[in-house]
Length: 93
Image 1: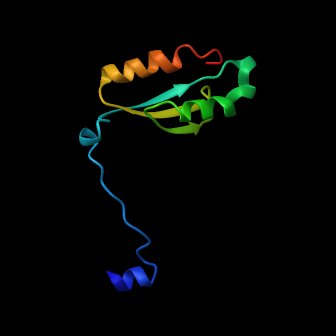
Image 2: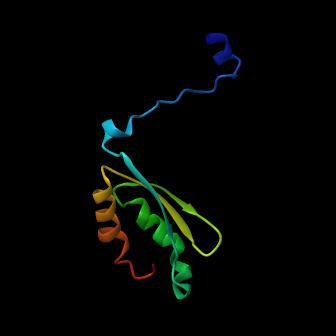
């Protein structure tokens, strides 16, 4: 192993996280469409989404949607709460 590390064959290691232990066992991918007259706000919205507790990643995507959010919560009800508290009220969405 050490020789493989020294030769650069092994570049690193990763940890396998148990989502049940971390309290984030409900995952969802949520597609977001920004209103046509608010397209200039996609960058600002993506930064806003990054700061919402539970949002793991924000992706810019093509097609009829603009962003995809990877969200992880403790439960499905917690996921529903996240959506209703943080996403439904946004003016540009």
